[in-house]
Image 1 (cartoon, rainbow, N blue to C red):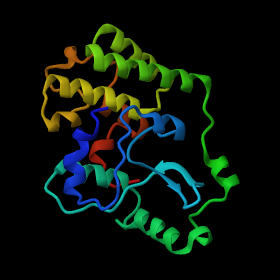
Image 2: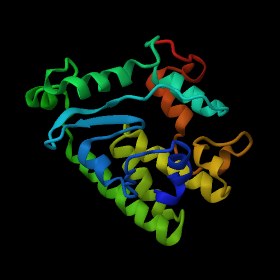
Image 3: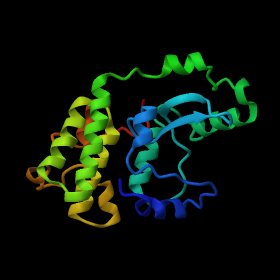
Image 4: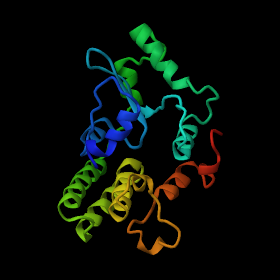
Length: 216
């Protein structure tokens, strides 16, 4: 939601040699069924989906950011090889449709999750919340539509994390604040959401998710 300026420092730091598209309104998330980050969708040269959205991450790169290291460890849990996901992509690039990781159209459909009318309603509420956030900040109406989106599609962590980040950045406009997705100690009463990132992850992965590292 922060647009290209919010992610430009990270793209520059990665020395990306490919175009980086920034979907400010999460339109592609809704169309492809993305519910968290990082998730990856494989699309071949003919524009066909070869793998629907799934959890995937590159190998960690050396850096001094403990948050990034925890994120990489969380993404590779259960896989002792840091290159496990990158190796799958490299195999597909080399072998194309003959790769064991490339799915047929029927397999893609079978692995795609059906979406209910509530999911469509959640996307509409999220769009309204973004519009109001850009025009009037975190008003009661903005929070109402964020809450409706979170209630209608509770497993969509992307919707929640964007709301958490926008709120934290609004209170403390520095880059690190974008990653503050839970209330700070002593400020729980000021947190306007019914949940937060740590609570969401505990519900999905168990209460010790943050300290468990790469354990399955």
